[in-house]
Amino acid sequence: MSDKTIWYNDKEIPETMYKAVTGQISGWSQLEHSNHFNSLNQCFQECKEAKTILDLGCGAAEVSRVFSNYDYAGADLEHIIKNVAEKKNPNKNYIIFDINLDDCAFLKKYDIVLMNSFLSEIPDYFRALNKVLLNSKKYIIVHRQEIQEMPSKLEEYVSYAGLTTTKTIINKKEFKNICSMNNFNIILDIPSTPINNNMRSFVLERQKND
Image (cartoon, rainbow, N blue to C red; front, side, top):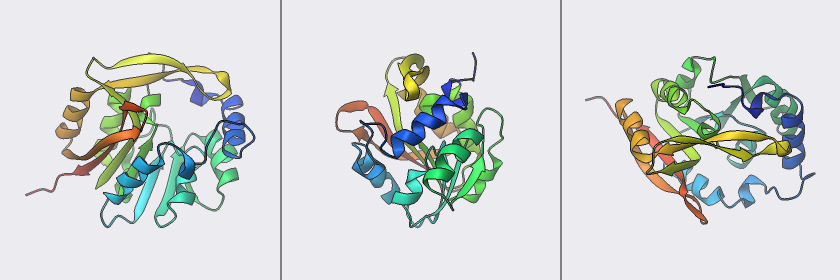
């Protein structure tokens, strides 16, 4: 299975993404006006005493603007950092990052690791999630992830620039087992939006050692 999804397209994807987040393309809402903002905000409220956040697959890094009370770092592919995040939200901390290549050891520095519509874009989500769980020290927010009772699977959908890519839909029991095996508890499990109960937002917390 190829890891080269449309997000590796270094021309059309950053151009369209930047136009969307700057209002040049209709139909895209700012984060704080989106139908998934309330669930994301609720997830952050569960992360008690957290001060630092690492935003995996940060895109335009709108989280840094809306949740400005955190010490923020965004991580994404180089062409997205340079052509979207740094243009839309300059003077923030950014890390060039590829989940398929990097070992994720740098995650240990942050209280919260956010994956906002991130796991769903990774064909080999199992390997990616295990990397994140292994290296995260306190909280993980998994936001806008489709969960089902049936076996995990890939489905095609149309994303930025009208390009077709895959999304990963994860089996609920499998997801819970991966978290438990890596010493994380699910402390919050809520719908991401009011219109799709299978699209979920989770807060995971590392279990304390006895």
